[in-house]
Length: 279
Length: 244
Ligand SMILES: Nc1ncnc2c1ncn2[C@@H]1O[C@H](COP(=O)(O)OP(=O)(O)O)[C@@H](O)[C@H]1O
Ligand SMILES: [Mg+2]
Image (tube, rainbow over all chains, first blue to last red):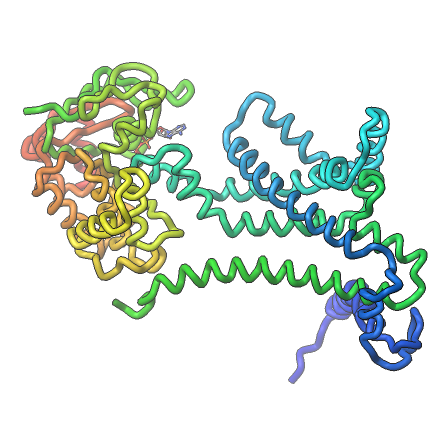
């Protein structure tokens, strides 16, 4: 016997279907079209299946400078990631105690998440102009990305330290550990899985940031800017091939992060050899 | 007898609330003192002052010949000499039992991995739990975890040991294994301060019993006197509640 389903079920089911279509529809379309036959165009129908456009991407008639743009985005993402981890751990530690101006500092930091990205970008661009500094992806661009990733990392670390049990630190102190030893050997290892989360956030937010890079990257493009540029002047499915490759790269990054967390947990279990064997 | 701990007119406030009120207590080397009293009477705070986990406002705390500074600046010197066992065990969740016991000897005392490992196994055997060395704290029962915590504190070869209600977070059936370990430890001549409501343990091991209430030491007596003829009304009331 099937249970009769109420109206809510169908409303939610439709909502979810639309959600899935919006999320995966375009991605799958790009994925499929990137395997367009050599004579195919930018839209369906498929005119055969090939990996022609992937070769074209790396071929002679270079479509945009996406390799350099990718390398820029990669480097920028990694540096932003490291700075984000470092600074958000330190601020997270600092904010465990109330100090003069801590509330004010908290809101000024977090408000960066509310200010429209394009305004931040424009502002930084203007400032560089005014000061007659040269904007570049590794200076003004990095600053703009950090205005986005740091508040995120900061909020995550505040949540992490809120749940962190201080008694572990007291135990370390009681064993004679210095402040630094307590952080190095007790606090950091315990919060390590969360740090991987912060790293992933820091990297991906920077890697695909468009608005905040728009006015701040100077003459050289990051990958999102380069791809956006290509949409206007590339008229072959190479564009989709590039989309597929960058999507795969993002997936690899996420899977790597998950793999590291998984490995950490496994390692714990492996050393806890006879757990559950009733020894 | 050599004095191991000397508390002189110790006062501590949390904001405007006075937790410790003119505490005077002197404890000799190898002496065993049990502290009891109602919840919130300041027992934990008192022993946390002894190993410099809490700052205090006035009076003096002297431990192992070192005067603890009020602001806790020389805390590490004290903490290396004092071992503490907590109610919630506080084992490091990310380390195996063995690593829990070798971390401080390696990092604080600078022993090699082998030396620290040998020392850790020695003390794990002392608390009769060497076969669990490779497990993680989460895989152990409460009683086992607390015995590991005792072993971990002992690896630093402390001059005195503090216990803050070591059995009150445990299931009744494993309380004995922890108390037995503490009795063994007492027999080795360790100086011990135990905050506990295990009156059987107090009778068996304590040289003196301290009764606290509202931040004050109300009564100090030998166990015989303390349990048979407590002088203060508050002590009598407390004992009638605890002993049932
Ligand atoms: N960090 C703190 N801030 C404010 N009050 C505290 C703090 N720690 C303990 N207290 C208060 O101090 C009193 C004594 O606490 P404690 O020493 O833990 O008592 P006991 O161990 O005897 O139960 C309690 O009233 C408790 O609420
Ligand atoms: Mg207590």
